[in-house]
Image (cartoon, rainbow, N blue to C red; front, side, top):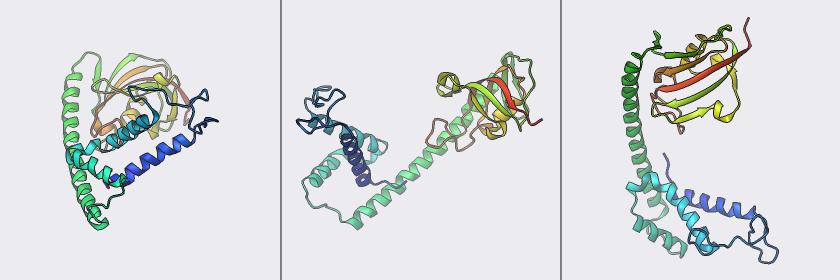
Length: 255
């Protein structure tokens, strides 16, 4: 992780200015106008003018960008450094010193993130194993040799797909805490894909389903996104996933 507050802040300010430049200008004042052609200067949330509003937005963006490192930052010193830079005062650190400080900081943050990732990986694996052990005891839940668990909600009468087939499905995916991370049902549009292109738990589970079926699948981390999860995404390392899947059709069978 290479952290550069100077680059981050500059990018945020530049993007904010770019957004303002894209807005229509009021013909009399030359300032960005709202959708009705009037200057956008009305009070918002107690911020009485545009200067206060812009300052608040930029401050919020900067704050959000440094929030992950808040335990490493002295806000009083940070605010003083911002004031010094805005006032054009010479920095207390030269370029070489600043680079050395930020390199050490980046290495420390990376080490902390890796430790947190390993802790989460162990936690998710343990919680998943405990959940599946209990879930497998419930009536109607079947556990396969791989560890995949499924429950038949509706049994269809059509053919079962093969790994080489392209299928069309409706589905909803959640984490063990019930949080939805993906849902074609919510989007209102089924999804079509080659069965060989999805995670092993889906490959196995969908091949058990006749067309017209709706199954509930519990997929252990090793049959889902594994130890890496989806980097930057909603699925953590070793996360056990829950899907409700309806197999609508085999679009083009290998046969």
